[in-house]
Length: 523
Image 1: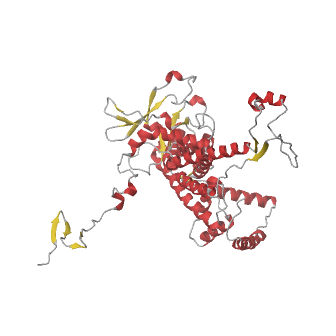
Image 2 (image 1 turned 60 degrees about the vertical axis):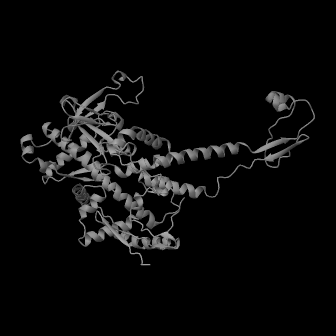
Image 3 (image 1 turned 120 degrees about the vertical axis):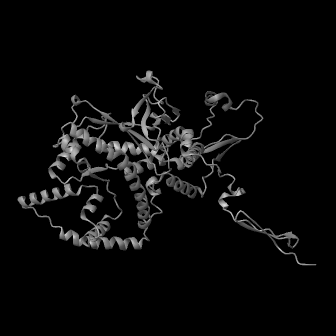
């Protein structure tokens, strides 16, 4: 019998080998190459296989997600701590401008007007411009977005610059507002777009949807007002999804973990509290006495019978029991030895979802070392810096600066006229934004590294000063003024001895770190 030859079939650029030979009575069929992640296998049955547009997901679940995010950040201690860490890192003491205009006189006047205006810019009168940055950062954490309305004021209001900022939370722009307008524009989640997809207006509610019914503006409940887009700054992180219209809470991926862990901790805490209420139990043997037990008649009957069921426990106490009674002490179940490890892993997961370091969120430094905590802070710093420049600087600081400059010139608050300003608007508006400085674990070593980079020409001294959160030109002026004043007063500050002693102290600290294995004290 002739040996069977394999048959070949070519279709759509694919060559499949079919064979009729049998090995051990089973046909040998080739396994087709595929992406395992795309198979409908048992392991991946619980993972969704459908793709929905990000804006559709926000429309469907955005309101519920924001409500849960706000609840957790107010009631869950870890979420509240993570929020504070996020806000202090993103805004800190404020992201501040430094004009790049070469005219020293103009720059000085501009800085004075800006500082005066920052104290008046809040339409609610609660804080300054840098405090508003912190509020915006908190809204970014909870809701993933915040709206800033630019409110023009009258000259008779007496402001340095007739401009104020009004903060509006995410809920003020309804997600269920989706319609087509008579002029051909369309509204998606409260944002109005024209025919080419440009934002032209925002349809805000007059009253917060969760406001109390006795609110003095309750007559406006559900009523919306159209605000042109040039008067609104919409702050949200657009780097997550292309085409995204509204923001997503920064807490999104950790909400489920935080909610379940919060419920578990509450149940565990309540279980231990109830168990601690019972220290001992009195057991009474059955009796043939037909009279009811005193406890059945209540406390008064028990006291009348002289049989108090409670036994006062104290050191060295000798207690007389009635015939047939015995004492059994409560032994509540412990949480178990795996409780700590279980909590640690889930808190790590929660911190990753919140985007903050575990040690910063929990305050737990027991498992950290100098190298590990510094590496974690470096990565956290990169993430925050990206958001600072993509959101806070680009979406808030620059537009506010431009509007402030225009209104300041028109109001005559600056030393230049409108015509002079329009002749070279870009040159007058150029500014750099200085973010808050980062505190490191070992500032001495970091400053030594910065000094080494400056001395060898790898870095500009002004870059080091900006990293500290200061304006280099203002710092130089203050240093020069201090030197002049010191010389006039005959002051001298010996810094050589301190500089000479510092390396030795640093070496001692390094030796001590090596002895302890690099671990930090968790106290």
